Length: 280
Image 1 (cartoon, one colour):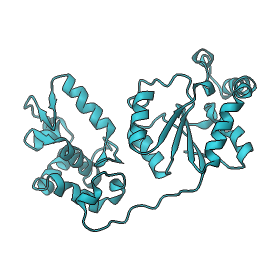
Image 2 (cartoon, rainbow, N blue to C red; image 1 turned 90 degrees about the vertical axis):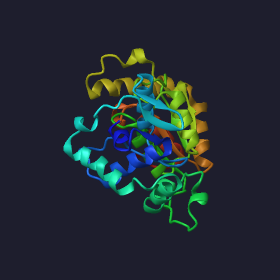
Image 3 (cartoon, rainbow, N blue to C red; image 1 turned 45 degrees about the vertical axis):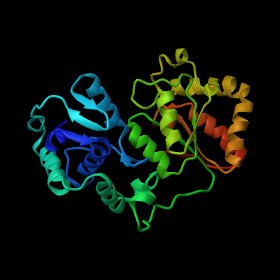
C-alpha cells in the first residue's frame, strides 16, 4: 500500500508486480517481504497477489487492470526508514519506466525471471541467456513447512521438476497456496504436472500424540507394513513415471524428511530404481 502511495495511489497490475520486485531485488529492505518466481509475464509473487485480493475484499484497494488505493492514508510513515527509502528509491529510479519498457528492463537485468514468459519474444529483440536446467531423470522430496508458496515453487523451478506428486491424505492447508486447487493451478501454469495420490497419505487421526522421533518412527513402521504393502500398484506408477525420464518430486508438509512419511515412500522407490533421493 505504501508502494501505491509513492506512485500516486494507482498502478497497472503488471507494473505493480515489477516495481515490488525491484524494491526487493535492488534496494535494501529490512527483510524479504515477498518472494518472486518466473511466471507468465516475468517476476510474480503469488503471496503479493493474494494480499492484494484480501485488501480489496476489505475495501482498502480496488483491483481491475489497475490496483488503486481507496483511502489516501500516509502508509509510508508506518514503515521503517530503510523500507521507506527503498520504495522511494524505486520511484526515483524507475517512475518514468512503465509497461513494456519496464518489462524489458526487468527481463534484461534478470533473465531467470523471463524464462516462463509468454511475451518474452515480443518484448526482447535480442536473445538473452536463460539459465541452463538439468533434464536427466531425478527423484526429489520437498516439504512446504517454513516456505512461502513463491519460495516453494521457485525451488521446483530451479530443479526443473516436471511432475509434483502430493502424498497428503487431505491436501488442504491453512497456509496460502498449498491447498490442492491452488497448488494444481500454480504448477499447471509453470508446466509442472500435479498428481495427488491420497492412498499414500496417513490418516489425520494417526498423527496425534507424536512427541518424539521414536513416536514418528513407530508410526512410519506401521505405515510401511500396512499402507505401502497395499499400494504397490501406485508405487509402480511412480516408478514408471521416473523411468519415462521425468524429474519427480514427492511433497507433503514437514520440511524435515525424518518426520514425514514421504521418506519411507522414497526409500521404497530408491530400491526399485537404484537412484538416491534429493530432499530439498
